[in-house]
Length: 294
Image (cartoon, rainbow, N blue to C red; front, side, top):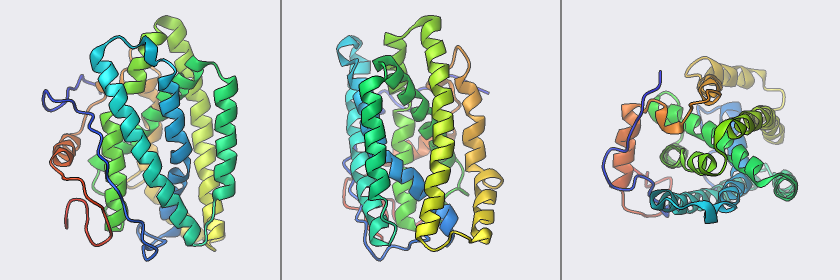
């Protein structure tokens, strides 16, 4: 069920936070549930973020001169700042994977080349529509991470804070690229383009994350750890079922009248937003959780 939602107060609800995470080499490799496959699922997501976030920024920036609404222009600037910080922190995250024997720099360079090709040959509106699709995916992950306590219940506190911070900011700016897209690609043609690019993004996202997860499993010596794969399948698809939640959320995106702000916002997410607004900015380490012990 969908309903229109609004920010919890009249202040701008997209707030750049220059948070730094200290990725210490002592952090555990199997940081979620002491399980490699579950941990590497999130690690695989992280590998896509540095280049992906830059692509999102650039796709919106292509239409910056067509944004006349001052509120949207303000949100776009906050979107740039949040995504740039995400890219920076996940670069450090990914570097730590290499320190732990899972060097993925070759695949990261390949991803960079693919994105450069896309930016060169894809029409600008296709790039923006693709960004809208991926932003919907990140918003769906944010709903689960912030709204379902089971999702990060067994995660190391450092990584729990990292993913909750990222999820909260994705939830905050989930409508920015979409609002820009509606401005520059209205009507049925814009809708059709949006649906076609979501189909492409879905294929790329499901296949890409699965391949990256399997490569990480091989590099960590768990290529044939069937028990871990089984636990990962249960976690992702059954309980808590974060991947199932994401896949089911695609259907709402296909509606002609879809808008990110029409998705129901769990009250827990609003509580997290208020808590983040109250936090001072400081380095986050394994010894100093972002929100203290909980």
